Length: 271
Image (cartoon, rainbow, N blue to C red; front, top):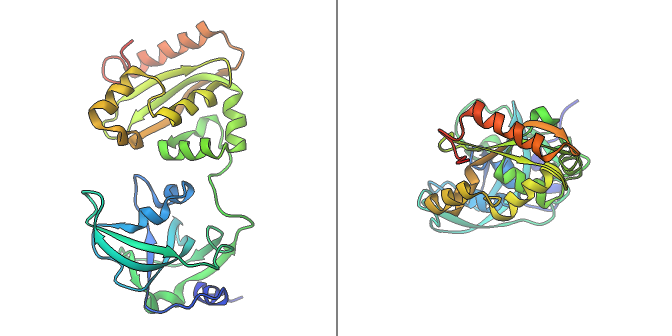
């Protein structure tokens, strides 16, 4: 059975395509998918190293895995100016075209892209964008993956907390334990613990609120590196305990992990 083309669905939604490019979004820190989950994809896309959007419209796709891509909208290009960040030379002004809400974040596209170029002339590749599936609801951060699989960038953690994602909140509110904060720019670790109250969830919410969670070492790190350095933090779990575990027990386990990782000698712990 032949799959429908993405461009056909776009036109059925009342959006006419003219001089357009296809943006195959990839990258890191943040990834485009992180930016999309955080509601910041448009801004993420507008900052470019080169004048990549010399066109009237952009069909935006985010790479998922293999040949699967997530459709995240069609944007009209309104203009371009010098970049707002040092590492970004150009900042585009765009607006999302209306009428596509039923497809944005829901349409999974099959595109067999076997080359590196990410900014493609639309007419050349449009016939190769096939709609593989349309999800029941817009893609968001997935359900809690299990305590042994927790690995979150600060941006992902912020989204989880701000959305009060039910599966994450339920899981993390019901355990105390020892967690690890890693500075991905330097590899340095901070070992912390949470006990009582809403456990790990409550503790990690404090990081979202302040960036440093009240930790002296992280506060000093941001004073040196700047507050935006928080985006380089990564959160994971080292050990989970029953929520009713004694405070002294959890702190003993925290001390154990500090010794294992030598986070006092070479990391961000100072006690």
